[in-house]
Amino acid sequence: MKRSLIAIQDFSVEELQELMDTANDIIANPSGYSELCRGKKIATLFFEPSTRTRLSFEAAMLELGGAVIGFSEAQSSSAAKGESVADTAKVISCYADIIAMRHPKEGAPLVAAMNASIPVINAGDGGHNHPTQTLADLLTIYREKGRLGNLTVGICGDLKFGRTVHSLIAALSRYEGIRFVLISPEELKLPSYVKKEILKANNIPYVQTTDLEAVMPELDILYMTRVQRERFFNEEDYLRLKDSYILTPERLYNAKKDLCIMHPLPRVNEISVAIDDDPRACYFKQVLYGKYMRMALILKLLKEAGTL
Ligand code: CP
Image (cartoon, rainbow, N blue to C red; front, side, top):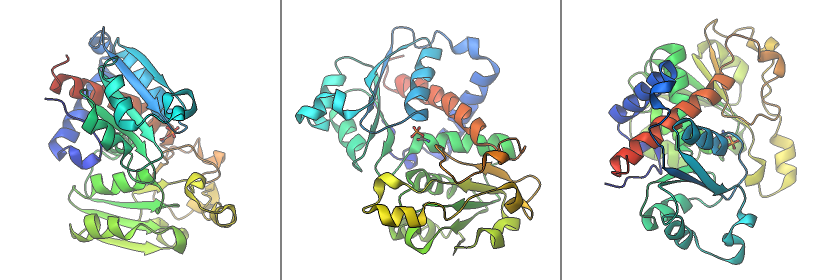
């Protein structure tokens, strides 16, 4: 049966574990996977800029032996002539076996999934969700910490517009012993709907603060995020808030020795490059793990659709 990934909640905890197990097996035995998608195509439909997500989907399919079609900006597609997302999904279903779609409008990949006859993967929809970034994040935490529960997770920066944050909170809230420390300027606090529907609904402990330094010693994970310039209504507010948090080696003075520092990237100014060589910096590993999780995801969705 055709199945899509629109929000991380579409997968059970058992399925997330299955994806991580597959990704770990691909890492250990890449040649065993190099022909599994021979003759299959992924369409990457990116209506918004991307480096990691689009290219990692493409690398993932190529490493599985498949092929790639697609576009990297709305202007080079017939969306520029007024074609709807629904029609685009129907058309691409005639050409490809699976779609990865990024769109600035919340809900666009869901509309695509409702109209496509092939699986659709949400590769980021507006300020809403980014479930495949969460797959990368989960594998990073699992490999670095050896567990996904019993962790104090600090999330810092733009918690309002940061779609990776919303998906990560939804995913981690399903594991035992998770506690969130939400660090942001007042104007960029986590949206009320995420607090109500995920944190409060599941009795997940959390605190909100503006002070990163004060909470640093408690953290097992520090997930830094970029202030999302493209979602701001005025440039003045962006300029005032963009450098609210800049992580430097000095600011880690009271951090745990085994802190795991993450960032979905791209970074602008949130983490000094001087931290890149710190063994606690995990953000480039996150990029690599994202490719393996997308390989595992493509295999799962194509198998369930009966295409493999
Ligand atoms: N993390 C992430 O979504 O990066 P890109 O915007 O480059 O895809």
